[in-house]
Image (cartoon, rainbow, N blue to C red; front, side, top):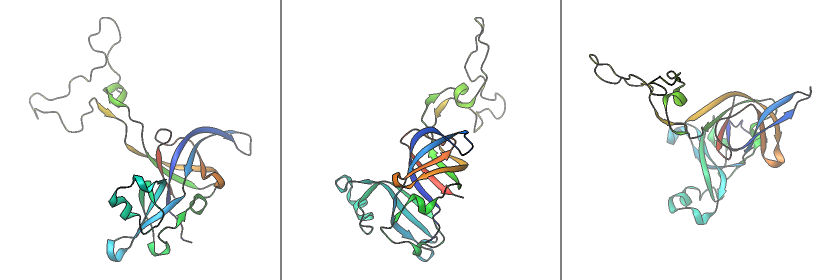
Amino acid sequence: MPKHIGILGKKIGMTRVYNEEGRVVPVTVIMAGPCVVLQKKNIATDGYNAIQVGFLPKRESRLNNPAAGHVKLAGKGGFYHIKEFRVADSELYELGQEITLTEVLQIGDLVEVSARTKGRGFQGVMKRHGFKGGGASHGSMFHRAPGSIGCSAWPSRVVKGKKLPGHMGTNMVTTKNLLVVDIRSEENVLLVKGAVPGAKQGIVHIYTL
């Protein structure tokens, strides 16, 4: 069986467990897998080796024609989330094959978890970029504004990348070197030490190191 490099999961929330020394360990609970192989890519036809997997089954009645045709060869119905993982040799996998949590990870492994952060909407520079802000006293005329943003003589424009108010959040963020504290294979549940990006019920991408 080839070594899998990743699996899809759903963030359940955070809690705490006790280790063998009786110390409290904060953990994030993730429901990971099973994922189904939907497509295989190889160097000859696609230029690289990869497999495409589906997570969280979807009723066939909810699939449009292109999606139904895409998953037809796997014979497992549709999925809400589809992700591609690079592999060393895609021919070692079969269409319709289920990849379970225990085939990917073991207790004590280090993983990388990628997810989309919580959306914060439109925010000012103090919350979005951590600006100090102006004086808070009654006589101050400058509290939370960004201040001067341009140049008058040269280059007579706002430079690219200037930190300004705007949309905050919903970015893909990766947290590295998270320790796998426990695996509960009968529930497809994974416990990793520390926090991972995203809100509860959000989809996470788990990569092995």
